[in-house]
Image (cartoon, rainbow, N blue to C red; front, side, top):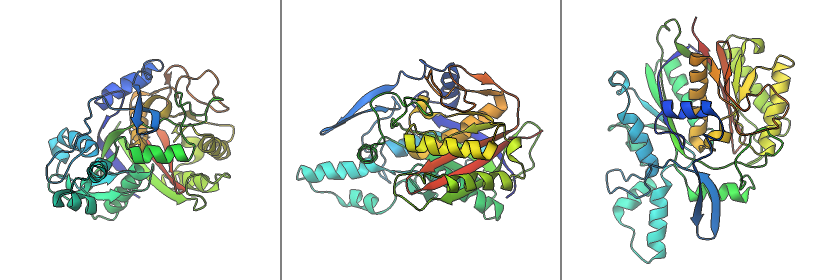
Length: 375
């Protein structure tokens, strides 16, 4: 594929209402990244989560109906530079606008009728209609949704279907998603600690991230997406393939498509969910792909929590910021990071121009992208 210039990034996370605020707190490291944990209770379910404090959960009686997920999207769309507001929109989300479904469920349990307006947006995707009267192109693939949206945009740009794209990964807290993670045993009561000796589960979070990418001649010191690759384990509904061979193939494919070699990769942003199954698989792939020359690595979920469909886009934005600034934030609050060249405790300066971003999700989905600093 052609290299795509990244012209704009932004995000909302539990650490900040803008990407700049989020990045500042990520680089401060613990305990600055631990202050957002709350307990979410719904019926008999009570679990720790990380939330965006400014997000409200009520349904707006608008067309289309809008809940927390739609409001996160609208906030970033309103903040876009004028020069890119008319580009087509690609959205990746694991849960969609589940607030509408919850509202309808509660009404039904209370014996209240569900009006036709609500039924319409249960049957048709309300998020796809948020883009300034443009129908967004939607991707639903669990936690890889955001990066699959990015891959979809890259294919369309490369085939001259569109000249550029606004790509969003988004998810608001959803009791449906949280309950699913609880049932798989993937959550824990203490902070998420990817790649540590105390890992064993993730902490669900929420947020939104946006990348604007265009096929244009890159200027010196601009950031470009050089490639994106995908694979699927096709072996288990929730667990990764224990050998990691399909994730490894995805990494190699991304590196090959970027016309570089593994030794050219300077930093890796792991999916890093904090579950033992994910961490063991990613570590094995990391060692096999890079051997003794392991690039500097980090993972964000120890600080941001698992932002679900937004997590891959958040990882991409972190890679972009790291290449621009020459600094990589720590994995999280860990004293015993497992075998690997991880940033731990405090931010680490580095010199390099290529980043590999990895994302995995239920269903065996894997997506990897290579970003580069143009010199």
